[in-house]
Structure formats: C-alpha cells, structure tokens
Image (cartoon, rainbow, N blue to C red; front, side):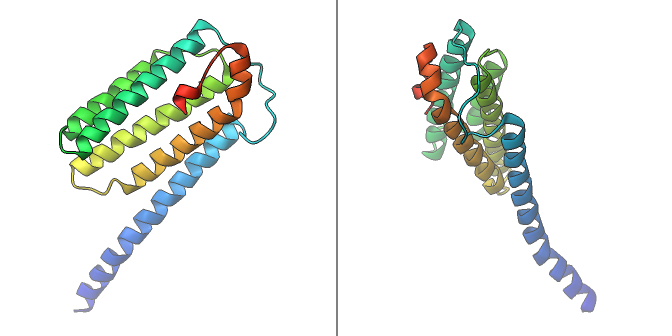
Length: 169
C-alpha cells in the first residue's frame, strides 16, 4: 500500500514539475532573446537599411503569417487537419530561411518569428498526439509579443528608410 501511495504521489507531482520546467524554459528563452537580440525599450542605435532583401523579408513574413493564420482558423473550425497546419508552419519556416534581411532589426525579427513558428508547429503536433499544447502555445504567443514589440519600436526608423513593417503588426 505504501509503495502504491509513493507512486501515486510521484504521479501527482510530475505534472507540476513538468509545468514548472516549461515555464522556466519559456522565461529562459525570452531572457535569451532579450539579452542576445538586445532590448526593445531603449533608443535605437541601429543603423537601419531598407534594401530589396529587407522588403522581401517583410513581404514573405506577412504572407506566411497570413497563410498560417488562415490554416489555423480552418483547423479550429474543423476544416483542416493538424498535418495541414504543420505543413503550413514548415512552409513558413522554409520561406523565412530563404530570406536574408540586411537590417539588424529585421534580422532579429526573423529569428523571433522562426522560434514562434517552431513553437506553434510543436503545439499542433502535441495536440494531434493528444498531449497538452499549452506550453508551446504560451511560448509562441510570448515570442509573437516580443516580435511585435521589436517591430513597433523600430517601425518609425524603418519607415524613414522606406520599409513599412505595419503589415507585420
């Protein structure tokens, strides 16, 4: 009986430890992006560019975010399968990989969007396998907010150079 209670106690603790570990990983990832990619709340010391490769990145990111959003809505309505959403996320990841923005802020945004697409894909995979997608969705939305804040902060200087990032907001 005591052995059964110990196993039972360990089983009830395990989800808490997993949730805590997920939260720690999410916080660590956001801290990593904040430290490595730089703060978004300070005055910009970035030498912005707006070359054709920067505009290509903006268009590619916009189109892929829209397509993934539409496929996700279809999935939530039951009109698409998990594999459709995963395929669209993979397509978005390939499209981002094929862009090479020259602007430092857009390069940072690319890294954050890539991580966001990966987490969203992982959430759909988890859900398709009857696992909780919560930690992946939490991370994906955190990364989306980080990308949004980054682009909002750099929107005016980028616009002055000729790059409109408003479609990504």
